[in-house]
Length: 52
Image (cartoon, rainbow, N blue to C red; front, side, top):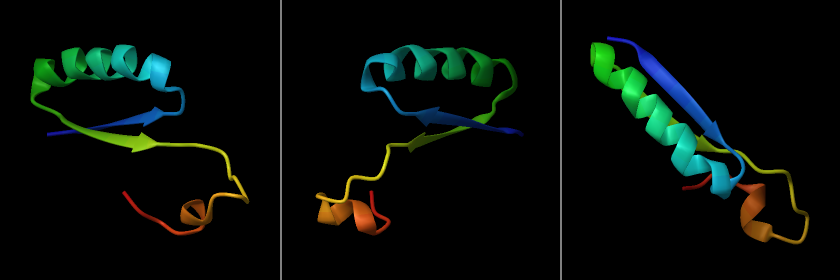
């Protein structure tokens, strides 16, 4: 079993990226991990700590 990491930054592209990862994962029963990546925003206090 392998792992596939999908890094999503633009929500508009997320569906396309995840759908492609699902197609690849189905070929060999891989796991998919999704991470949302964004730039730091000093006005957003929640962005200073790790979270969901």
